[in-house]
Length: 269
Image 1 (cartoon, rainbow, N blue to C red):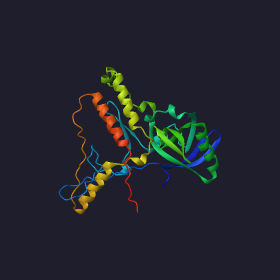
Image 2 (image 1 turned 90 degrees about the horizontal axis):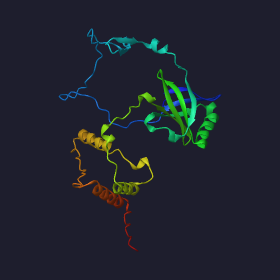
Image 3 (image 1 turned 135 degrees about the vertical axis):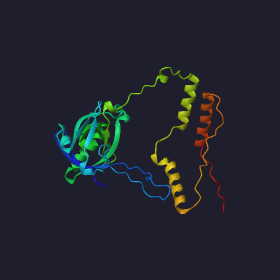
């Protein structure tokens, strides 16, 4: 992995030199737009709407369109002149309990690796987060933009989750929920029973990306000239009369799915 950022965690008067690495990667198939007739790639060119000329990257600047249609142009020097900290520092602002942070704020996850000379204070901060059962609220400037973030300990590593600002979270306004009927006691009891029947310990390795696997099989079949696989999955459970009936059937299915399979008897010698 290559670091995407280098700097230091500022923890009171303690400075911890670190490197930032992306902690996640999306496993997906990347497609190109191509011409159906001959399979040729479709390319896009940067063309100016005003003069009709093709524009190179050196001639591009940022533009923000105002409500009245005027365009405000900003170049690299304008962004560099902004009155925000651009030094490579992760400033710890506060420590909070994990349950106080709504996951809706989390944006992207990174690993923090210490420099050799910073291993000891790094381990101290990591173990302190574990012992105190706290998250560290921090600020960091990345790609010329100040970002709120959280530090937390995971196994031997300190992780950083960049976060959205409060005004970037949309408020839900669904009028239909204002007059939603309250669940009846029998419905709530059955729904609770269903939850208990399906409860377990979360292990992400128990789940698979069925769509990506099916898409991979389709691409392989197309590439080799084999017969493309067809979707055989069905969800026809029959018509459900009411909510209680649906819950009762769901509980039965959940209990049946959790029953251990009988072991095969081995023949004695």
